Length: 126
Image (tube, rainbow, N blue to C red; front, side, top):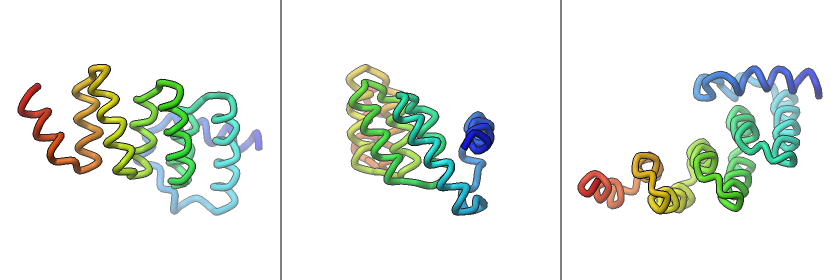
């Protein structure tokens, strides 16, 4: 697992959007997911989200992002829900970000969730 951890650390330091999960073998995805599980257990949600994004594990992305919300880490949650393409939770985090207030990040969340009503509202009022 240590070798996979080093590879994964190298990958998550890169632009995740440029890493293609379909190029990874199933055994490598499993090892990366195991390493990401360790990240979650250690409270390193940011790296876990990046690892799950690399493997394309949407279920784990959502679970980890929900833990981010429980731990008051809405920016990591936004990243995870974005990779998971979870529309409902993107809306939820959008409203949380508005309360901070971080209008720019809330706008990102609402755009990704295709919430035209909130996107228009923010553009018109802020």
